[in-house]
Length: 121
Image (spheres, rainbow, N blue to C red):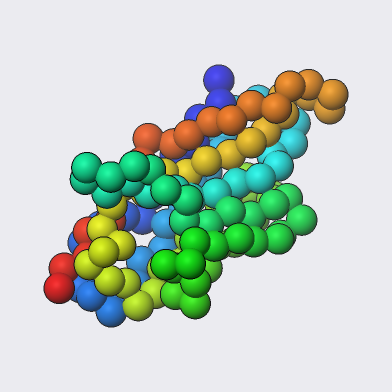
């Protein structure tokens, strides 16, 4: 059974920083793209940042220059460093991973359970 477990969320004042982590555990051969998404109350889930296995990154315009996504392939972990946080960054943040269980196997797409980030003004 593959699991994605996020940590690092919490309450922070505007202008502050948080670092989210997501560990992928279980029977995995290769993890391809990983990413972070968020969902604010009464809004749709939206992309925050993604990173390929080779380290190429992509960011939502709203977080460019403030957030940094990175990964440690040896630890099957993806991080999201969030700086200069704003109240509008308040949301539940979800980790996402595309992976294969064998070399020529299917590509799976799993989600974590989410971690709450609240930024006070």
